[in-house]
Length: 85
Image (cartoon, rainbow, N blue to C red; front, side, top):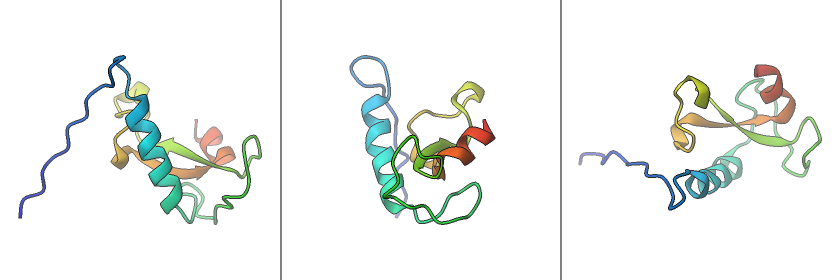
């Protein structure tokens, strides 16, 4: 069975916000560890705690990474994501 390649289309306003929000929630719900440092993520911590969970773009949007592609999103601690830049 061939895997159908998913197409990513902008939302009605031309952005990918709705798709991103859906994929962000999915990534965070499935995450156990930070993809950058490998330490556990405590999902009870909330922003602006430096160890709170956030979503990192593996390939930055500025370098051509897709803004809402689930394969370009990974869970990370806020501080790890900030240090990565």
